[in-house]
Length: 329
Ligand code: FPP
Image 1 (cartoon, protein in one colour):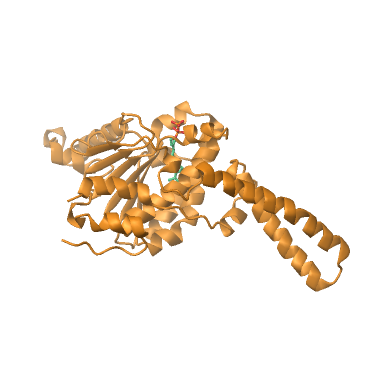
Image 2 (cartoon, helix red, strand yellow; image 1 turned 60 degrees about the horizontal axis):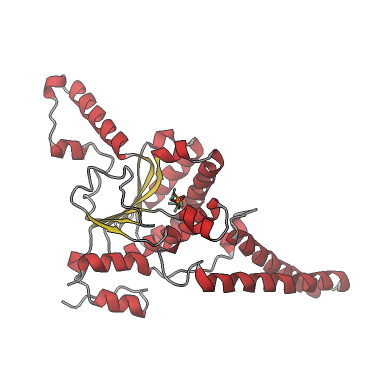
């Protein structure tokens, strides 16, 4: 059967999609996003730069999954262990990144008809983060396309403990423990993922063969795909890395270096309002270049201008290839 090619795929992706049986695409993909730190270390950047670059992969993976019609995608964004093992500054940075993602991505999530959900002990997250999560969930609640579930402060063992406690509590409220019924269905109904089918494909980036306490019950029958690709590179060639990344960086340094004297010259020599306006424009461009430069090094003095100017789109090929392996006819 010839698949109808979804809009927005490039030539290579469309070719690959054409070889698929859409009926055999995974119904639920779970992803363990790993390798942000290593990605940064290889570039002599701070770890947080890896997390920032990871958000771009989140963005392209989510969009592609929705576009090719995957009904559910679950991303392991923040494990319960992350609280204990990582320095506070990194945890705070990740929380800030999440808040910004939830705010900025709302239009894209709505455009792609994506509904946002969460799994994990949300009540243990900082109140400001919980508030943003709640708002994002409400504002995408009417969407009926892909369900994007973020695992935040998540641990599969804790999920099972919470499920068993909920079952005991329910039985106690329903006439006593003699009414406690435990079977596979009742456990599934009390998991955080009760709104989802079990994943049929789990992807782990950066090569490690571990489940790291992720969806242990739900992954019982899932196909496992481990790729050596680091999470920030889990997309195509137009991303941050490699030779192209270096070229972009050089381009920015040069542009900023050329623009700064032009601004100074215009401001100092021209009192006329029109020239002042040009100077302001050039100054804005200079700021843009400097912010992009800072972003490449994980130093973000102010968030909003970088997003006003954000233009870089990455190829969504990586998740696509995983789906192809799963659904090839
Ligand atoms: C593992 O990399 C990844 C994480 C701890 C978190 C993933 C977070 C993001 C991709 C960004 C924020 C997420 C959202 C949804 C906005 P690591 O630091 O463990 O890498 P390493 O094993 O190479 O050190």
